[in-house]
Amino acid sequence: MPHGELPPGIERVLFTEEQIAARIREVGGEISERFAGRPCLKLIGVLKGSVFFLTELSRQIRIPVKIDFLAISSFSSKPGAPGLVRIAKDLDDPIHDEDVLLVEDIVDTGFTLRYLLRTLAGRGPNSLAVCTFLDRTSKRIVQAPVDFRCFEIPDRFVIGYGLDHHQLYRNLPYVAVLKPDSQRS
Ligand code: IMP
Ligand code: MG
Image (cartoon, rainbow, N blue to C red; front, top):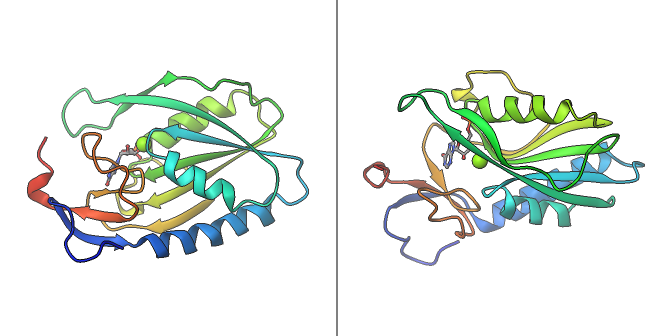
């Protein structure tokens, strides 16, 4: 929790460092129970936003984990249109026959998640589940299954704990709402 003043551009804190840590412990426990008895769970993080969440989550999972990352780039045909997604950096290793948990920072329209699930499912994992740090179900356009989520959020642009605005704010230890007048690109 910031003491006193917030950095410029930030309207209010949505989830404090303490709330985030407590919730990730709970979700890590749920994941550990779901995959109890499995030899290993492969966590796949989507660069760059999910890195902060993934590292903390992995420490709260009580079965062996492996970690791999991919990066995507999304682009819209026109501003505000749903993004087209492609893989900009692929995984280092195959996921065939593995239990895979895709770890996302935020699921909004669902386009990114749907694309990633289709791509990963085609590689023959033993199982494929999704854990997202934040979920904005009110903005969902395409259905994409979320198995584990830490927080549902309102329809406001948020930053911190991995989430950025023009690559800034990822290192904030809390999640905050950006002031509308700071959101212009
Ligand atoms: P979608 O689910 O395909 O619409 O896109 C999700 C992606 O949009 C996330 O991976 C983020 O990169 C970005 N995004 C959506 N909402 C926010 C937000 O409130 N703050 C920061 N990034 C966001
Ligand atoms: Mg993202």
